[in-house]
Length: 414
Image 1 (cartoon, rainbow, N blue to C red):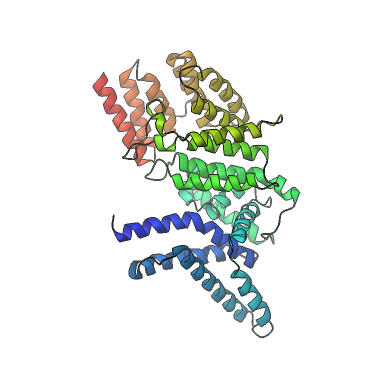
Image 2: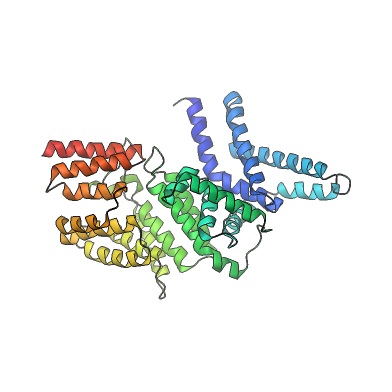
């Protein structure tokens, strides 16, 4: 691996780790007069890093270098703004105060700014759909294509949604500030859903060349853990979501081979499962189930619990019952198809095939992937036909490669 590749990987890592913190901190001082100002400053900082580091090499402390450049760019912006407003003399004292406060970039401030940024974005002046869309871009650094994939939507729709959401915030006088109990209560569901989408993009990416993006999973867990560690935001739903993430993350190292291709659940090496994460998942799930509240996160965590702790066929009946509940609470094509996969384990493939074909999700790659799996034992040509349709529909190169290998494997066995 050459120096330029190492530099590119480091910048990608730092972008995911620091972009939101830097944006949130700068926004705090601009009172989010415009989110784009903070985003532009941070983006320019990373652009400058890519250019400067390519010539001069990576600095000894790259994170500190990024913050120093971002601070200097913020100072320059403030100075230009004050000049523009012709308030140089009267605002000298104010300018010094603002610049000095930006320099106070200690860890606690960053952490608080980040959490406050998440809740600030999830302001009810926007619809929940727009809140999540904006949060995914500003907080999680998602591309328009990644957001479109998460919402099963078109990129043009997402672009319009982002424009409307930013415009609404800009006109609403909203600020990053300490939250009231009412604000936390009204916004936390949106925050949790955003972090759930962030984790899912890492756990099974449809838009990246990599099927699994561990950094996104780690970032989602870190942020949910911050919510759970805060007495004001440690709700049962937050703990259930953290349990789900712990269970799912416990299998990340076993889900792909050395070439980055997916290993089916039944073929995974259980020695690679992280038992400490499974234990943490059990702890958080137990703490989430102390009342009568049952959310989709509780049910999904319970399903993942059975996958993580039980072997053999006995787990499938309780998993099917959980999917029966889940599909009533949150119907989606993915959940409906996952339910039928569980049903096939309990009642057999023939019954499952009849259930799948009732759905007619003809443009859904997972619909054809599931039919390919279910037909493999009884009707090879139909299995291959559906796998090829799934290949045509998926956006993931890795998934296409895995499905081609499945087809070759079926051909050899038939």
